Image (tube, rainbow, N blue to C red):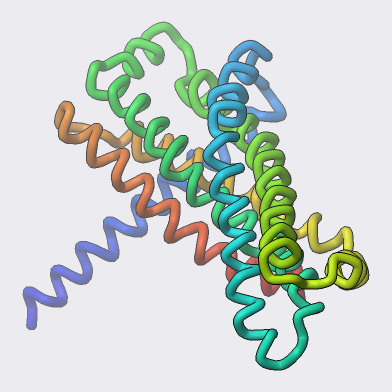
Length: 257
């Protein structure tokens, strides 16, 4: 029993210390965004890597997600002769929930893991220590450009994902399932409001910040050579997805209700 209590206490202490480190990194990053913003060329490079190179996978995933929602909705609503509800169901699902969450999860795997591996390699090869030796803040030079890029590019990618998801849902409902196009569009426009899209974009901006902070923290904490870099990338993916889903619930309670 004593060993169990000791183990739990050790794990709880390690969790609180890591939470404090992440919070400190987040606070310092936000402060540097306003007090010492990085150069535009550093931000634009991250925007290209994070946004343009991620666009194809976001579009493909968003399209098929909207198609799946439409197909599953038709299967259920056809039994109740409520096929006209497929339009608002697809649009609201993509705008409020699926668009932001699926896009964030994809970017956690593609961008977050890559970011953690890159910074982890710099950490184990002592490049970050070299930055400190040259009186350059690693947070300002490495984290802030990625943070600013994520705040702008993740909502933009989410908007593309929402649009293509709704288009994919409309294709399945109208072309494959025979739903009346006029009713589909009319009900979708009637029940979908600008606030629904705004909710999704706000959530996606928060998720983008989470991905960057978690990835940079794990990268800075990497140790043990190549094995440590691989663990940092894996933990970034897992932790980011868990935190995104938890934060998504609380943002739903805050923004929707």
